Length: 200
Image (tube, rainbow, N blue to C red; front, top):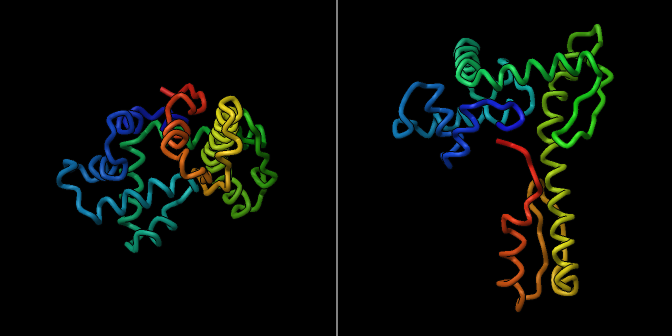
């Protein structure tokens, strides 16, 4: 939402609404109370699919619907979230021009196939280019969180009492001495340890 600057998506997150229910409400033109489990499921498919550059054919497969229905849903989604649509088009165009994408924090990823004359290679590169700034920014944020938690543990002489075991996608798993859990765990999860971000 914040990478694209889409006002509707940002408003949904700021309001604390369930993103999939709110998107289903917009796309199906119903109130959030009228959103069914299946509507929410369909919205969830496209919400996550957008991050991977999902097209109509992949959407049809994932929804288990006709191509016509998938196209209608796809069109409605990007009509309602036009800021996101413009962002995705911009990413493809900028990547074709520059040959790379950047995360929010400036880390680059290059795409050799983005100018390929072979359509399926170019399309694959475009899908990866759409995904790279989103998941790359998520990866940057989790690494910044690791650094900030480590600094907190070091500054408070807690390195003997807590240690990072592993990262699972957007989660950090720590091993903490039982006596210290109630003190350390809330600090690790607190707002003042979150990485700085200039989103709206």
